[in-house]
Structures are given as C-alpha cells and as structure tokens.
Image: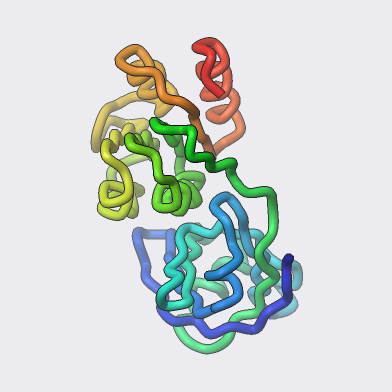
Length: 209
C-alpha cells in the first residue's frame, strides 16, 4: 500500500558527472517495497512542482533505508542532487514489482543506462542459484555501481557503446551470446524501450519467459 511520507535523507553520493545515489531513511519503504517498484519524489520549488518517479535501486531492511539512483535531467533532479541532508517528501512504494519465484534457478538481468539500477534490488532479492547481470552503458565514465552488481550476481558482463570499457557491443548482443552457452529460466530487463523490446524478442525466440 502506497503512502505519502516525509523521510530523512541519510546520504547523497555523486557516482559520475550527472548521476547521484541518495539513501533515504524509511522503515515503511524498507519493509514494504519490492524489486521493480519506484517512488515519486517531491523535488520542491515552483520549477519542479510535479513529483519525479525514480526506481528503488536497493533496500537495507536492517538499517531501514533504501537507495534511489537518478540522473540530473532538469530542474527537479538538479534540485534533488543538491539535497544532501534534511527531509524529502515521497509517495511510495508504487508500481508493479518484478515476478520473483523460487522455481527460477538461473536468472539473467539485462539493463541499459539508468535502467540498470532497479535490477540491483532484484538480484539481491532473488534466491536463484545462478545470477547473471548484463549491463550496457554509453562509455567508461558512465559505468556506475559495478562493484555492487558484482557482489549481487555470480557473473557480470558490461558493454559500452564506444568500447572504452568492457565489450563494444549492445547489451542485447551480450544476451544473445550468453543464451548460446546456457539458457536461463527467466530474463528480466529494464532500460530504453528499444533495448527492452529487443531483449524480449531474444527471450521469446529462445522460449524463455
């Protein structure tokens, strides 16, 4: 059940030029949010009147906190990137979560750009015996949270558009290559629409949900 909450900002970290990770103290969200859900954040000010939807990147139930990672794209996210302390007004948790089932013993997550972030919570929540993360970014400087993905998955591959880090390829090409070796039980994806459609088509072609 979603609630409108006024919570405390516990930490703000700049991950790269325009991407920030904010940790928010919220017992309600930490206990009730599922992987794939998001929060609507009130950034404040006349220029940013509407709430911004931001995916939940990860949850720390023991410390009653959760992380959101966002890219600065306008007045709202610019204001949010400057709030390193104080209160934040959120509506959460929102959205339909990913389907996590114990019958999925081998999973693959396919993420592109800022769409990679909610897949971290999914990996940390899954009890699959084999977890693979295939992540795509524009260039080396836009690769973020790599260490956390490597801690959450058994195998991680990274592709960049310009080849400055990992493999020079589309992340969906990594998916095609991976499936040739071993079919997973399910593929999860989040990112640009064209990337998700391609990932879904590859999975469907190979009989993978």
